[in-house]
Length: 87
Image (cartoon, rainbow, N blue to C red; front, side):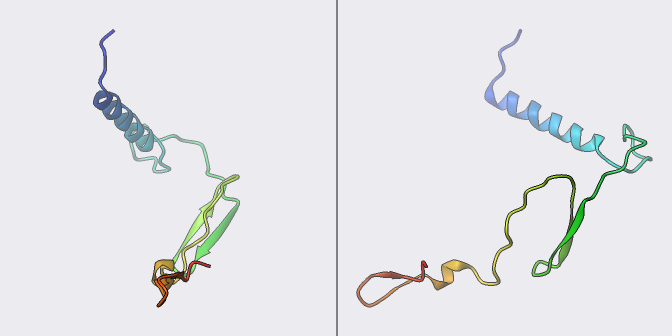
């Protein structure tokens, strides 16, 4: 069995991931697309600030959205060189 370098392993994993993505399509015209299945959507959520909606399929965990301004803009140093805006 040949010894594979880390780069070879990464390339192989990338190709396998691409192949798996190609296999998951609901378009029956695509080669190797699965047939006879439907994706169960439990709910649809809106990211109003970002301007899109997304489906929740099964038990998915989601991260909270970001605020309208980055928190880093509130961080500053006062006259005594104390950091403010972190709480």
